[in-house]
Structures are given as structure tokens and as C-alpha cells.
Image 1 (cartoon, protein in one colour):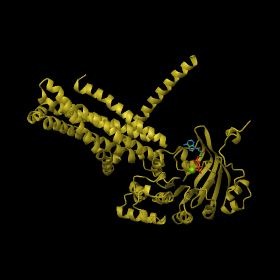
Image 2: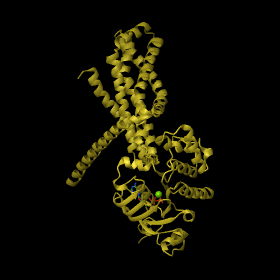
Image 3: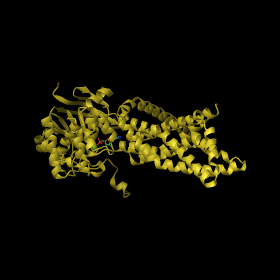
Image 4: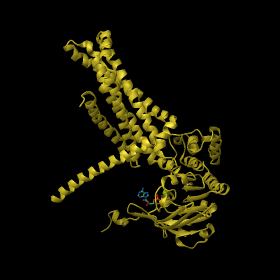
Length: 266
Length: 264
Ligand SMILES: Nc1ncnc2c1ncn2[C@@H]1O[C@H](COP(=O)(O)OP(=O)(O)OP(=O)(O)O)[C@@H](O)[C@H]1O
Ligand SMILES: [Mg+2]
């Protein structure tokens, strides 16, 4: 068993004509928490989907637990996904089930556990995200941040070896944010999981992750441990860590001249 | 000029190819649903749930419409039959119209707009909110878990609803013909019993409603599953479900009737 759970080499991906990821190299060792940061639209969600096998790389190699995802067949993919959890950017809770049933979903689909044990497991997961009391609410009765925490509980229901988190901190208040950060760290350490966290929250993630990748325009612009990132003099990293508008990262989607669009050009 | 003509013909060609392509995809989808039906029968409570949402919740509209259609048949039928002095045959006219045609067809049309549109909207929204993608990420096949139970729930509900529609229609015909107008109750029922054949009429009616049920449900499921994951995409898909399945019901009805009652 290799030390690396995820190995990505020279990965590229296109949506139709559009090259979204180019020449990505990324490694995640077992037991690590890896952060992927980058400006909006740079391809972070796309990268997570590729790791989850929802799409196949256009070129390059992407290995999860030694399995090449570009050539995996449906059965093997489903087998692998039983050991993978994914937290979707917008929660993606099943709206026709209660919070309890959402968290119990995989336990019921993939195990033959008796209902009493499922109940205990679900309450444990919900307790970990602080929402045990909300177990009989429907997803429509939850706030955005609560939905995300339920989705987090759901994604860890089967104690997977790998969890992909798409912006777990978005929409959380400072308390839940800290708790969620600690939870991700603790799950990873105690259960020997590996976590890939896509996030915009530089301060929170630098506290808890082992390694950071910065993505910009589909390429990895910088990488390093939190200490290296904090000390980095790279203009890109500096701009991101300090949240400055001016720097190498364009705030604007590529556009023609502003004055011309407003009809002010001569 | 020439250019525009060529462009126009190209457009027709492309649209035709697109349609045929989509039909192929839909047929493949139908096969997949059948292949993945095993799970839903082993976990029958999933189907029961869908029988409730598709069938039981459509009861009111089916029952009320059936009653009114039957009452109108009673009125109109009486007017016509009376000119030939054959008002005793009102029961035959009402029941045959309902069991052979109106029951399966009108119930299926109502079912398409009540349950079919709901199925499309629900599945389309599940897709738009990434619930389908999330299910796939949890190694659960959405065709087996979401689509197949809905298919069977609706297909089982359809003939039952059509039968109830016909029964309510007969009741409506009785209320108007016998209770209101005063046709003889004995001949109303006895002529009906004599004229309606179990195999010819009832079974054929049931076959029709099963076929319509399959057509409506697969169209509704496919439109939902294939809808672009946006609000606009889902709303268009819902409209298409109602339009396409109504046309499919009427077209299939013509074909089935030709085979069943004319022996073409
Ligand atoms: N289904 C799709 N079809 C075509 N292009 C897409 C599709 N999904 C995303 N894209 C494009 O791919 C690029 C990367 O999208 P992605 O969702 O990975 O960004 P992201 O880094 O997750 O952004 P955010 O931080 O805002 O979530 C975007 O520019 C987007 O326009
Ligand atoms: Mg994203």
C-alpha cells in the first residue's frame, strides 16, 4: 500500500472547448488534510469532481488509492466511492427526507445494520456537528450553514478513507467555523482519514491543514506547508493571504475594456 | 437565396437527427430502468411511497372528473337515444364509452398533468440541486433508487385510477339518467351487464391504461432526468412532459383501438 492516497500527475481537463485545468500535480498522503485554495471559478470544484470520479481527466494521470481514475469501470468506481465521502458546495441534502434519514441514507443503502444501531450512529454523527437536536427537521427548515453541517455529517456516515470537502466553511458563523475546522482535523487524525478541503478561508485553514495548494486559472500557482505559505514572498500568495484587490490575481472575469462596455469609448 | 435554402434544409435535418437521437437515449433510459427494477421490488416500501404520491394524491381530481364526465355522458346520451326511443340503452352507452375509451384516455391525460408533471419537476430539481450527483457519489445508483420506484409506483397506479374513473363515470351517468331524468333503473343496469364484455371491453380498457401509464411515466422520468439543471430547464421539461405525453396517449389510443376493436 503506497503512502500516497491521491497522486495527480500532469492532469488536464476541458469542458467542451474550454481548458479548465492544465498540468496539475498534486499529492495527498494518507492521514493528511490538504487545502486547495484559489479564486472563484479557477477550477477547484472541477478538481474535486475529478477525484470523485464524476468526470474523467482529459489527459494525465489521477490515482486514488492506486487506482487510475481515467480507466476505472462503473463497478470498481462504486466500490471505491463507498470509501469516499463528498461534501457538496451547496449541501445537496435529499429534500424529501428528514435530517435523520439523510444521515442514515448510506448506512441503510450499504449495510445491513439493525435500525437501533443506525440510530446510534446517526446521532453520533449529528452530535459531532452539533445538530443532534435537529434530527427530525426537513432540509427546507434548515439555514444554509446548518444544511452544510448536516451534509458534513452525512458525508462521514460510513467513516470513509477519503473525504472531499467543497467549501465546508462557507456560510458558517465563527463558532461553527472553528468547530468544523477542528472536526475535520480530528476526524482525519482519529479515523486515519485523508481530507481534501476546498476553501476560501485562508486564516482558518492555515490553522489546521498539513499542506496547501493554490490554484489560479487552472494551474497550481504555489504550494507549501502553512508555515511556508505564511512566510512566502510570492506576490500571488501574498495577495491571497492578505486579501488584496491589486495583484497578480485578477478580480474580474476576462472582459473587454470597461469604458467600451459602458459606451464611453470614442 | 440558395444559401438560405440550404441553411433551412440543414436546420430541418439537424432537428430531425436531434429528435431521433433523443428517442434513442430515451429508449436506452427505459431499458436501464427495467434492468434496475429488481432493487425496488425487493424494497417494496419504496414503491408503496410512490404509489401514494402518484396514485393516492391524484384520487380527488380523477374521481371528480370521472363523476362529471359520466354526468355529461348521461345528459348527452339521453338526448340522442331518446330520439330513437332507445333511452333504456343509456347504461350501455355510458359504460362502454367509459370502459373502452374515456376511462383510460381521460384518466391518463389527467394523470400526465397531475402526476407526470410532478415527477418531472421533482427529478429535475433533484438534479439541479445536485442531489442526483450526491447519490452517485455515495455509490447509490439513482436509476435504481430514485427512478425505478417512481416508474413502478406510477405504472401500478394508472390502471387503478382509470378503473376508478370509469366507476365514478357510471355512477354519474346513473345519477343523471336514472335519478334525475327518470330512465328505468332495471333496464339501465341489466342492459349494461349484458352489453359489456369482460374480455372485449374491460380487459382491453385495462391494457390501454397500462400502456398509457408506461408511456406517461417514462416520458415524465426521462424529461426530468434529462432536464438542464436550471430553473428554466426544469420548467421547460415539465411543459414538455405534459405536451409529449398527451400526444403520446392520443396517438397510442388510436393504434390500440384500431387493433382491439376493429381487428385491423
Ligand atoms: N458544467 C460546466 N460546463 C462548462 N463549464 C463549466 C461547467 N462547470 C464549471 N465550468 C467552468 O469551469 C470553471 C471552473 O469551475 P469550478 O466550478 O471548478 O470553479 P470553482 O473553483 O469551484 O469556483 P467557486 O470557488 O466559485 O466554486 C469555471 O470557469 C466555469 O465557468
Ligand atoms: Mg466551486
